[in-house]
Length: 328
Image (tube, rainbow, N blue to C red; front, top):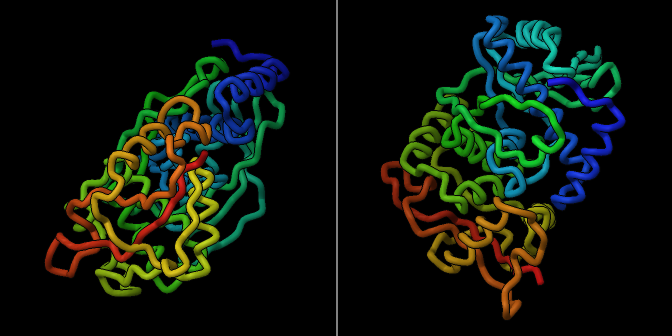
């Protein structure tokens, strides 16, 4: 496939974003993310690396696109210690993908607690600067990796190739990791994990029994706090949870007495399913989530087997609730 001139690509990107109701910078990041996935898949095929996997927000976006929150970071798992991971990423970046080339910038930031190093990767298209992506390079310790077909729309119109699949941390293990992160001793900035877990549940993608097993293992391995954890959420997360809920297309004013999220009854299950379906298809405008009466409602995940049980059972309830008001 012959590459488009850079100027034409920019115009096409703007047009597709406008037609699909997407933020143009978000679409640009998706192009960058998928270009990085393309070169990583190429590196696996060439034997430069044995495997890789995506995690964090980027894995959620490539799975669920508009239903997921926006992320700017590319969370990547590779085998080896930090120095070995950096060396492997440098080798991968030399391969290029289609008309995209990559260059690691010299600055880096060590995140000791997560055994992760953040590096910036300059992405170029036909020798012109396209975008700089922050790559969080963590350890490749996943027990399960899923082959995920990217659900990003609009790239065919832009005329760019994409990999047939990308490798993402297994969804059950990812939810278990998020549960550990948002209930642990270093959870100050982990409010987003609560919304991510609820999203997976809303979309009916969570295998509760397997996630329960993964969570028990991860809590035991990391040994920072007990499983099952306390699910009381810090009151200061209220505003961030509201903002993240709005980003997903609905308003979420928490009740004054509910700085913790609790309850997982049937509640408004049909509304929840409709919201989740609308978020994952077509254009996510606020009208996609409107109700005829415009009343507020409490969205609750389905009342099924939970992953926050007592330690010896799989049944139980989350100690969390999110009150949301349907957008008008």
